[in-house]
Image (cartoon, rainbow, N blue to C red; front, side, top):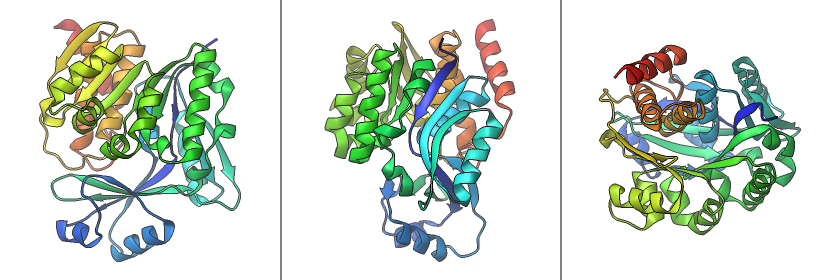
Length: 332
């Protein structure tokens, strides 16, 4: 019996978010708007340079944010990852327990829990500096066949393809998914994943039922110049596709139904987690039998609300947002 609707497979990271100026970001020598893998020493050095200003902390990671959103909208979910046996690891596990999400994540003695330094500039763009730490040891042995057997869908973040252990773990997860008739969704995660790990990503996508990509990722993946062209190419290759394009809205294809959904205009504050929220809301909608256009409208609205606030978690009631958007689409 499949009593879990959606299981995420990805990095477990404690997000540490700071507001910074453009000059401060420039001084760190990182690429604005991208994700950079950073060692622990460099991470500590950057945090120290920011002084004693307020930092917002929460459990996260790209796929984790999607699973959290899915659960808070009312879905039954699980998450597969790995944690260090430290304060951040205990914090992470406790948050998942409180949210009612099944967490399959060993607490490894002597290892450090992963973290993501999120630098947010005044234009709301977020630049990520990630220390994978214990996540680099996530391997095939940490993939639970039983949880995948119980799951209707698994959701894999592209970030897991940045090291050999992660690649092997994803391959094993795909094997279990095929064995137990579990469907597979994959998020491209970041443009650099397509650029640097594109061959492996394309191998994984051969076994994928649903692809999530933003404009940058989609055009690189499809080798097209424009988002609309990339969407059409991906829609010809995959049965289910979602391509988001920021303020220009999104296009979706689900079970042969296609829809273009406009973005909701907001005053942008922090873009952290917007794509993760979109995926969680869309998956909640379609896996609960809603029309894909309605699911995309929920996803578009929820992700816009995340952009209009500080932090990757929707501060408004997920249930109230869910019901308001889905009820309004049904009555139209």
